[in-house]
Amino acid sequence: MRHNPEYDLAMQRDAKSHKGDNGKVAVVGGSRFIHGAPIFNALAAEASGIDTLSLCLPKCHEEAAKGWILNAFIHPFQGDHLSDADTEPILELIAPLDCVVMGSGIARTGERVHALEDIIASCTCPMVLDATALQGNTIEIVSGKTAVLTPHLGELERMGYTMDDLPDVARDSGAVIVLKSYEDHVFAPEGTEKIRGGNAGLTVGGTGDALAGLIAGLIAQHMSPFEAACTACRVMKKAGGNLEKTKGYAYTTVDVIHEIPALLRMQ
Image (cartoon, rainbow, N blue to C red; front, side, top):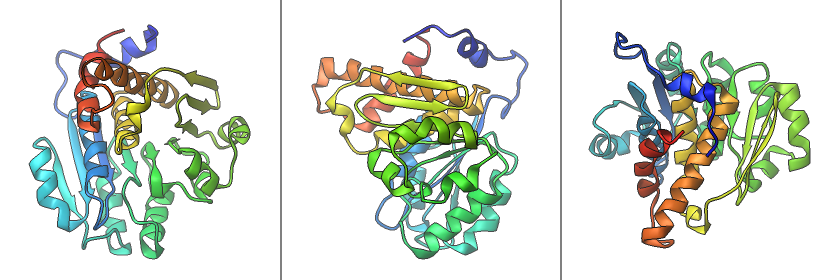
């Protein structure tokens, strides 16, 4: 993992800082049948070292979230799926925050997508967008905003792009795009970076959710979106390498998240 002076500066803290000075993140995700995705987002953001965390997820998963995360404000949706009724309360919640992760685990149907698009369009804080937040019009909606998009190849196809399009898309929109694969590619207005490493154990469900949460946590601690994306990709791949030595490929996303704090110190 390369040494990066900007990263070191980002992680230094004022000894006199107060709660909230070192990162405030929100997560908006989940559906009736998917509770783990937003929790993985939140756990990874927490592992980055942020101060405060807000988690918006289906009402039916409120208690599960409370069981996994003690240091979080839990804001359940009005029901068991994201709906238009949730739009204004979520926008009020995220307005003063440093970063928000949206899309992981949200059902890709009707009102859910409409509500998510409305939140993205009106959001004024930096965003990390994953899964259902990645639609054919997402680039248009986020153009000029501070946003990191984290598609895999299938989601990129749904968005209507190929890998060859992404340097121009990033430059024209101002967004950072992380194309997840056995080699991650990070496209940004300022350039492109390829991240190698990791292993096939990282195909386990939830690692993409953890990556999105980690990026958000680093942005909330004043790292640039491009550097946050590159750093998070390296950390995830290094975590997979570490875990393979003791667990083979039989490790989980929670195991990966537990590796994050130590790896962030290895600069």
